[in-house]
Image 1 (tube, one colour):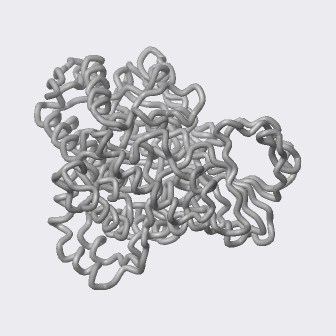
Image 2: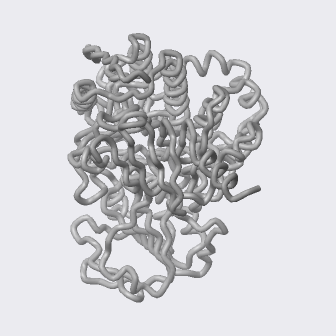
Length: 557
């Protein structure tokens, strides 16, 4: 083959209909849908395999807080019938095995380029195409780009003085070594008490010579009561999957199937409430926060649930002073991500575990031997940062994304993320987000929300092609109206009362804006369907001939 032909082939390979960034659950399904439409698609993934968050988060005890039978794809009847989950709440290795199975079953790997990061993207207004630059320096062009980078994929390590001086080992729960870590006989410090820490701490405590946990804000956690998944239970789900999936999509606020309560906590007597909470505690899992129908909106009702969990902490933890430190009192239960654990509170009864409160005495610096807080130095062989993520916007911020007139997404979102439906951004045509800010996203069963977004995007591309439309872009009006609606709905709940990562409060300098849409998976789905049925209302469509088709956004009721 001549050099000229080789170059021609390289140019051909560099041009695609759609580029997808990320090969987690969103990226894999997006690839499957678009490929079935006959589109030329390429996925770029910085990891060495599929799986997204379940590829990176391999810390001890990593486990999903959504039950396995619900945390799975529904797009293929054969897939959901053939796969066998082994536990009520699947652990990370099993979920990663599931993701790999999906990639192999649908032959997705040939269209995924692993160990490749997207460093920048720019939109060409003349030809309505994106130029995507890879870390190799190669440029790829595509008519459309789908950001399937995940809401919790940008691990955040605090900028502590002296961090590089530490002579021991440091780890982040979101970037765990793939070959594991042996803490046997070591002095270990864990910084953070969020979801990842709550899962990891009991495991690390069982290995380490001594474990010291540094806590700024205690979290509410409910026991998982995990167990093996019986064949009978799995069969019940599989026989009824069609109806159960429909209920998750169309009737549920969070994409989960369970019997949603119909009364307020204040309608029960104190004795009846206690019995009800005890029953929910015995079941375990995040649905504890749905014990009554007003826990998210009525502070008096919420207080009853919060106090019940605090009473459980006092009951479990033997040292009254430690128990007091572990009891959240500064925010309503559920307004920070509710955690699910296995023996978390019990771990603080161990002789080799120490809890250090750093709320009023922040960590001053890392030293070669450990860290200093409250004027005291703690010495460690290893430090684990369970300090979470730059949630929802962090993965986008890592890429230099430039839309019309060279505006960057960072500039656009300087005061907080702005989207229309969490799907698109004004000024950035042909750029889609899967479970982006302004959508139910992290407040829902992520797989349900992922499938809904992927299906909407795929259907949209079909409609654009049939109508001769070359670009689609959210209008400024529809975007501002949607942002106002997202904030209005959130303000009617207790969620804004907590300094949570939903608000960006875990990242210094990040704007305090409630990022996910709390209006419910069911209502959101109806809104997206309505927008599409009205000719993509709220979007500006430009045809190949250059004419514009603008649809005003419908008013929110």
